[in-house]
Amino acid sequence: MRKNLLKAKFNASEPVVNGWLHIPSTVSAEAMAHQGFDSLTLDLQHGLIDYSTALPMLQVIGTTDVVPMVRVPWNEPGIIMKCLDAGAYGVICPMVNTQEECEAFVGACRYPPATHGYRSSGPTRAKLYGGDDYGDHANDEILTLAMIETAQALENIDAIMSVEGLDGVYVGPSDLGQSMGHGTGLDRQEPVMLEAINHIAATAKKHGIVAGIHTGDPKYASERLANGYNYITIGSDFGLMNAAAKQAVNAVRAGESMDLEASAY
Image (cartoon, one colour):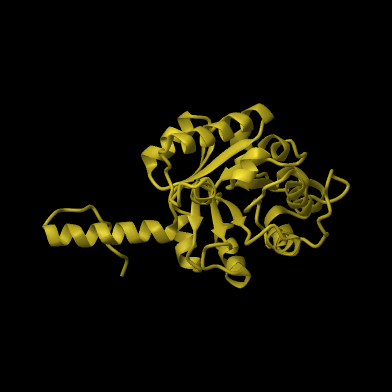
């Protein structure tokens, strides 16, 4: 089976930079896959992507060495298994608040007889991407990341992280901030939020699993890497496009230069 390059990086204590895809397009997915990201995550929860567009996006990402990930809409086994059968090499699951919910998530990603495993066998495209022996090794290669994004999840953090087969957690700062009474937004600076974010990373290290977080600014991302996180997302394709377009328009209006590569004709 094709090795999961993210697992190799995590085992070598190398940081992973993840890209985030909101736009339902194979062209933008292909472009993002050539920008140096270690992995790309298709957002089926808050992005504009559904399964019918996710499949061809996974196919174009699969032409590169970038590891294809998905964030599923919810902790529901049907869509989790379907995305894995389509060739996703890891799943980020939203709103995991208890040990039981985490066990249900992990179980949907693992074939029996793995602990909690109840994934149904039928890796339609996954065998094309991963190899004919996919079924024999998928439990060792597929990444499972549970999102920590509520005050309830924080209270249950040790129980969640103790679930066998969980590879890591992924912080959703916006929902976490809202749940803790501090409103939405990335790159949290509130002392209580930073304390929670640092606590999640420290607890993940204690349990020997990955700590991931969504960020909006490269400097903030670097700070999180220095504070125990090893899986960092910077913005999204939609956000990066908007920011670059606005910057270009403002530069024109101000008569300033901006290094933009010319479009191909």
